[in-house]
Image (cartoon, rainbow, N blue to C red):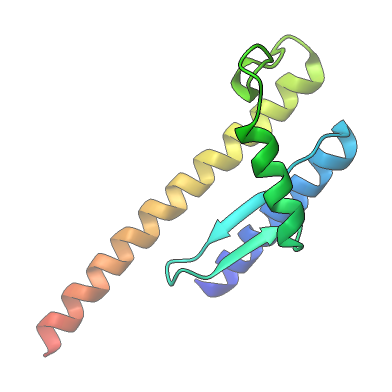
Length: 111
C-alpha cells in the first residue's frame, strides 16, 4: 500500500509540475497523509503559500479555475486528465478507508 501511495503521490507532483511548466501558470499540490504529514510541490513552502495566497486574493471579477475556457483542446485534454486522476484518487481513498475499517475490526476481534 505504501508503494502505491508513493507512486501516486509522485505522479501528482509530476503532473502539477508539468501543468505549471507547460501552461506557464503558478500551481501547487498539497498532500496530507492519514498521519497528518504534509508534503507539497513545490517543496519550498513559501512558494506553496504564495500560490494559495494568490488564489485567496483572486479578484471576484477574474475567472475562477472552474470558469476557465473549456473550449480549447488543450484545456479539454487537461481537464480530462485531471478528472481521470481525481476519480482514481477517490477510488483509492475509498479502498484505503474500507481496508482501514476492516483492519480495525480485525484488531478488535483478535483482542
